[in-house]
Image 1 (cartoon, one colour):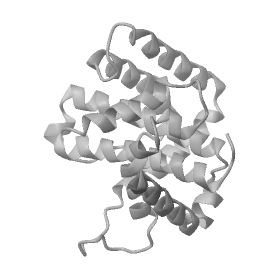
Image 2 (image 1 turned 45 degrees about the horizontal axis):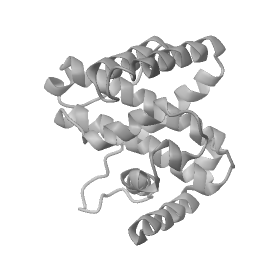
Image 3 (image 1 turned 90 degrees about the vertical axis):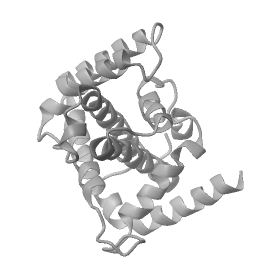
Length: 215
């Protein structure tokens, strides 16, 4: 994968897309089924390093690009004048931290890949968003990423969070977010890029949204 601003912007937008779905489930008890498919699909489609192909096309990252512009913006208020919700930013930073720890632990990384391959094998019998596939991916997250610590504590509606299927979806989406974080690193991303390329990535995201709108 070429290390450039476009690829880093796409990878980070994919991360924010997964986190957006996590927050929807945590606060509302459900997320957009199409977004869930996009995020989980990134885990099982590993025969390319082209980010747009991994996520099924640029248009599928539209919501993530918008979330990126919101989260990287310097303002303290949202467009409605309310204090900005920094939950997604915190979760995303935590995922980036865990991804770095993952790459330093070969044993856990190998276990993660085995778990994903197990889920891929089940696609012969189940659809991507079937509870069996989600449960398999959630189990992989629990047995790998979650063990690296510190664990990501998701806030939200306790009734929604207590539903086992919702908890499984959140873990599977956090695994998808880790996949996006890996793509971010492969595209040349890192702490300093996140700090000093904020405005450049916002401009790139704006251009990509315009590209989507023109098609």
